[in-house]
Image (tube, rainbow, N blue to C red; front, side, top):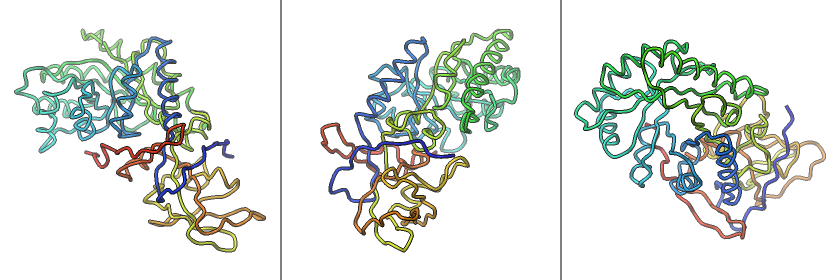
Length: 368
């Protein structure tokens, strides 16, 4: 499918490439917009930390009104809790064995924590990890609403997981799902409906079994507003904060809202191509079926980032294009920003007035 336009602000001079560059005014706008839209619906926002992994941006989201933060790993939660951001949900079925059990116990004692669960076995592991705690660990039962990744296969199956978790001494908060099947052209509408229907059906089943359901949590950037309906209490979108080429292609965000790019330098030229210094270790090899190439270069219409090596990308140029010179710096919009962020220890934060700062990626590498 053809790319939608992604206008990118001018890159600052003197960048040491490859570099992840974040336009702070666009981040502020993205944070404020979704918070405002969900506030108007009476639905809480619990944004996913995995996209930016930045304590500074997490604080920005909380200060804008977020009800808490979502993480994918114990490691991410540890980083946030250490920074004083302690209203956390690990939206992942943690297998709390070995070192993870002790880490989870400590985190549970220091944070206001909830953890995803989708099986009796996982519930038993969680309960064993916090057995000597002063307070029960809160869990949220995951339902598969169509993404076919994790979660119980049908809403009614949530009851058996909740019963097992309750018998193990865990506190049941409610149900959650991830509309992963929203990540296809035209898929967001149906995925959002699936999220709402699955959560509501699971909530009814739990209530019929005697459980109080406080949380119905949905989440994906493409379906972030479409799933904020019915009984849904919170949305866990993450990628909206930076945006990327895939989100623009899916019409989940506007091109003008893309807030992060990879700055790269032309290091070699050929008859019909150039080579830039941003390869797989700067752009990742994420290649959705609905885009061509490993990133979009707005300044070079028709160019395709067609081959990646560790530190090189080969960019083919359409016929008649004037070949850029060695030393030219260009912005590349990554296909998927989340793994790109985890490749760097800092990013260049550019204010609207052109002022530069280097912000740390605080949870870099905290994947477990």
